[in-house]
Image 1 (cartoon, rainbow, N blue to C red):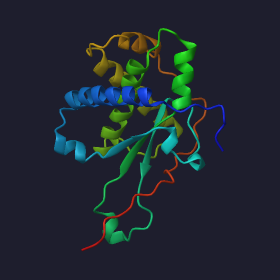
Image 2 (image 1 turned 120 degrees about the vertical axis):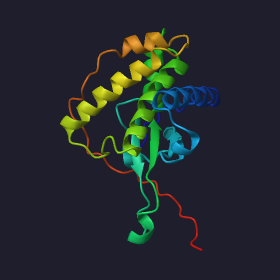
Image 3 (image 1 turned 90 degrees about the vertical axis):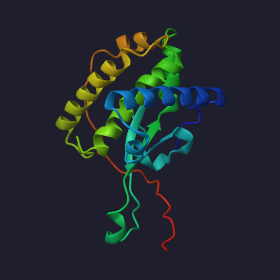
Image 4 (image 1 turned 45 degrees about the horizontal axis):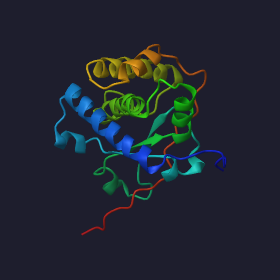
Length: 193
C-alpha cells in the first residue's frame, strides 16, 4: 500500500520528464549510433508511480528498469515477441531529492536518470548484458553504466547538468539487492490472424 504522504508528479513536472526523455534518448542515440528502426528493437516505456503496481514494490533509486514479458504466451508465440522494458520512475524519491538540494533541478536530474536507464535498455537489448544478474555482477554493470552516463552527458549543453554529474560522480554499490522480479504488468497481445 502506498504511503498517503507520497506525492506524484504534477502535469508540469510530467512535461519536464517528457523533455528530459527526449534529450536523453537523443544523447543515447548519438552515443550508440542508433537508428529509429534500431530503437524499435529495444522497446521501452516510461511510467511514473501512478502507473506502477504497488505489488511490484518500489526501489530506492530514482528509476529502475523492469522487464515485462507476456506470461500467457505459448512457446511458439513467445519467440517472436521482444521484451518490453519499463523505466519505472520513483516520483517521491525525485521530489525528495529536489527538496533536499535547492541547486538540483528536475530537468537535468531526469536527463541523467533517463540516460542511465536507457543505457541499460540498449545493453540488455543488444545482449551486451543479461537482465538477471548476481549482486556482484550487478554492481559491475551499474559501475559501467554510471561511467557511460557521465561520458555521454559531459558534452550535453544543459544548465544544471554538470552539477548533477558532480553530485553522482562516485559510484556507490548497493549494500543489498532485492531479487529482480518481472513487473506484474502484462502486455495485451494482438489478435492472431
